[in-house]
Image 1 (cartoon, rainbow, N blue to C red):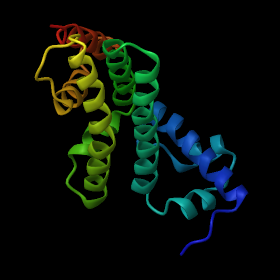
Image 2 (cartoon, rainbow, N blue to C red):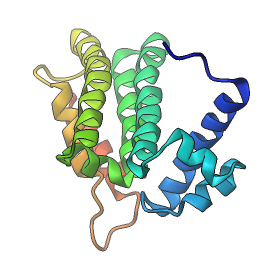
Image 3 (cartoon, helix red, strand yellow):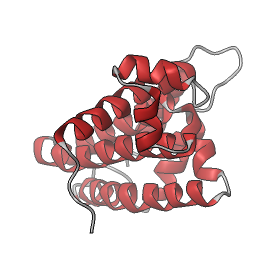
Length: 183
């Protein structure tokens, strides 16, 4: 049984995850480790103590972001009408996909670490999205037969870069997609 992390180790881990989130969004998954540690205010040794492999860091950042997106589902459901909660959550998910260029490829990759991330992604996101869809369908605010996997895949595909279009183009396409969910 492992002991709880020391407070400074927990702070360092949080700083690394936050810095990595920003740096990976700006520079991609191949960003230099030094760029991440400088932003976090820790040494490179601290990074490798927490994340021995680059893939460990990328997966930890993605899991952290997936958790935050999944948690938003219940918050939105409690505060918004069903269709609005669904649309707001899909836009939140769109931001996750649009700013994490490596997420779609990581979910499709065949290695064991990425396979674990793929399972984690669907286990966290599908139930949240299913609940939002069911509530909106019960309220008659979206067409019947919409599945969570349909939305997860559609948004990921719509957020792929399109040559000649501005970076936010995928977000516009997601709005068109959401309008198509209405009955």
